[in-house]
Amino acid sequence: MTVKVKFVSETEIKEGKNLLDASKDSKVKLKDSCDGKGKCGKCLVKVVSGNLTKPSNKEVSLIGTKKIEQGYRLACQAEVIDGEVAIEVVHGA
Image (cartoon, rainbow, N blue to C red):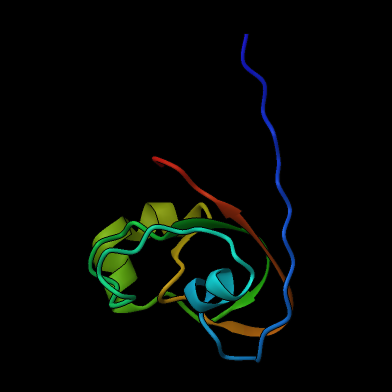
């Protein structure tokens, strides 16, 4: 039998910082083999709630509009605009 476990971590960041940098500040491990350049797609996350910048052209070409419409983003490309943001770390999506 398998069960799901949810880990929650919270940190405060400056507005405009991307989610990959925020994850590093809060000690949440996200894969990123391209140093945040939007080329590898390994830092894929799912936005649960909050305001982020519009998807970049790199995101659209790498993960596609369908996944973006489902809430998926590249952490290295998505910047926090304001308020509170909740993100789900995705493994193998």
